[in-house]
Amino acid sequence: VIAAYGIVIGSVGAYLLHLIRERRRLLAALDASPPERRRTWTRGDGVETPS
Amino acid sequence: MDPQGGTTLERAALWLAVVARAPEDSVQGVVQKILYVHPPLAFAAYLGFALTALGGALYLWRGEEAWDRLARSAAEVGVLFCTLVVVTGPIWARGTWGRWWSWDLRLTITLLLWFVYLAYLLLRSFTEGSERAARFAAVYGIAGLAVIPLNYFAIQIAGGRAIHPENLQRGSLGAGMGLPFLLGVIVTLLAFVHLLLRRLEVERMRAILAERSVDPTGGGEDSWGT
Image (cartoon, chains in turn orange, green):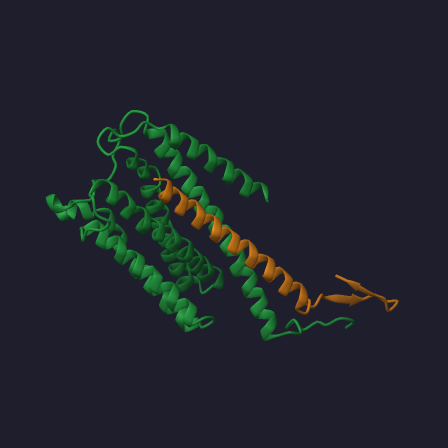
């Protein structure tokens, strides 16, 4: 019984850890990748302002 | 640790405490306590595969990638829970039947269900990013759902030849066994939802990253300073 519960908790915990690590890795990769272009518009005086 | 993860852990700890205090079965002894985890895992696996089929159907209908991501994520989490069903079952069987496995209809169909969605995941991993493969996988995921009712009603189909116990019904549990079983179902389903949400987030981030790597400039018509 302890083996059964241990396998279940261990497996779910290991998968959760894997997802947490993968999320961290992807966050780092997203930070390192080029940012999305932001739309800007130019005011009459020539100053660019994010919309 | 995030608050959601914390509460999931707290619920799991409460459930384990209730399971530890649950009365021992007079015939099977302590090994019967696997009951509080084995069927709930099967319910979560069924839910995962049902969501795979639903996501696939909506992807075919609407053509939105988000539904394909749901199908893929639910299949992965569903396979995890189905794997645990296939692992915990033989431990219980060894304790009660004296052997790890029997080619009983329920056990055989559970193994088939596991293989069907394992093949789904293999298909997805070999054909990553292909729209055609996503469409094929959606149809496959929907077709695979037919195994679930077959699995659930396997005992009735097998008639008296089934070695696996019948499905639980109201009143079929002994005194003091209802609460740990109910808690087992709740905790397992909450764990399933928690893992699915995290898996979906990972899938969404992968999609954004893939989009950026295809078009590293961002793809928009506007640009900085224009």
